[in-house]
Image (tube, rainbow, N blue to C red):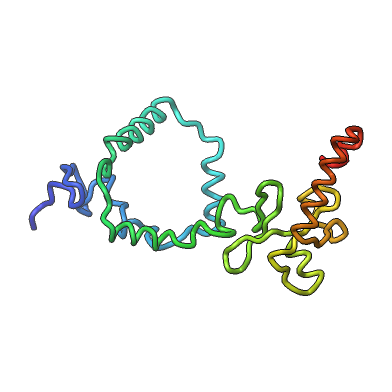
Length: 194
């Protein structure tokens, strides 16, 4: 039997090896003992305890930094290469659903604040104003497009039912015109409507 002189994976010359792979390639992919398996919670805790308080020497830090620099920017194997449309489609499919809803790091419980008003995520993926949803639940029907929900205390995030009032566009506009007029003629009371 002929002795293997180069690594079967990267082609580097071997000093000694029973597997035919160098030390950096022997644990890659399916050759890795943990391939397709996961650590148990107990083993993860043990590894954390073993690594805690470990001090990395300056020499080791330099080696790590050198390795990172070796594979960044123009030195990265994929630098300047463009993925084919087929590859892009595969990547999209693999990512699909991994960053949506509760899985997203920025998840705030399905509520969003936009221009001072709270919006709630619906089952169809769209957002609806929270004060409209609260009023619809209270009156037991959907609001028409002409109906506006007015916040009595002028705080758009205060969506208590006792602070909400149904109005038409016309009535709502008249009310706010009157409030603006009151601010001009009674400046001492203007702080009530800000």
